[in-house]
Length: 285
Image 1 (tube, helix red, strand yellow):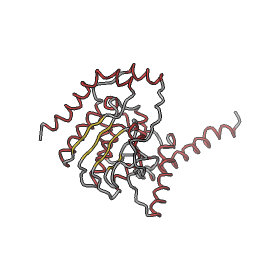
Image 2: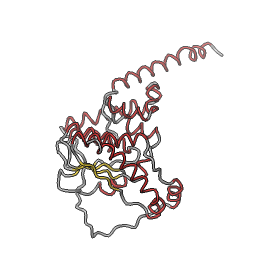
Image 3: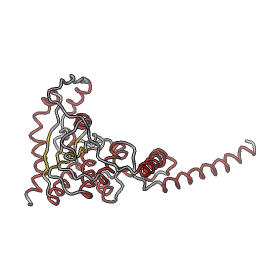
Image 4: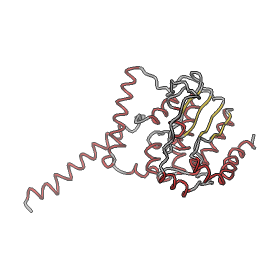
């Protein structure tokens, strides 16, 4: 090997790599406190703090309800705060949204939980939970709750920033640009609501069912024991109800007939265990 190549491999290349890593780390530290504004759920996490409206009803739900309600007005202006998200956000994310809302607003009269039954016993892949929750909820109490039940959620934080450019630099940088733009426009972030008035007489489209996905869902069945983090979220929701005085309403969104029939025998057990979580707190009043 020639002398220039040895100098490049043994000195110039490592020095350049180290310099880039240090620059990336410096950017990551500078951007570490930027509130994320990547998608609708990030916007919701900020809107529940800044929206000046005091809502009478808060809706916590997954994408089944979100997709059905996003375009429609759910009541008079300012009546319903639609905090429906998606499965990767899950019950923990809905709880954290509610906690943020209550920290900035008077308590609503009702909190409605409209999650598919399977959502109580299921938690998304840890990588997706980290992406959707860890970078969105950065407060100490929020991260402490997540880490208690998902101990590995912060394992990528130990990586140098140059090994995780998207989450540590690129997305925070574009979030910062959006923050500056909205600040310049003096635009207040509000909880999004639809504008269409629902018409119960409107013809509906026939649902398209993926038979492979349907068969997989039926074979997996329904977990009748709530996942630990979901059970903890329900208990904390009970405590919030006791502290703030709102009533909790539980609803099931519509299910495909085949799935509803396949898991109908497990519904009583699931309902009983959820009722126990709520009843434990009610019994203390």
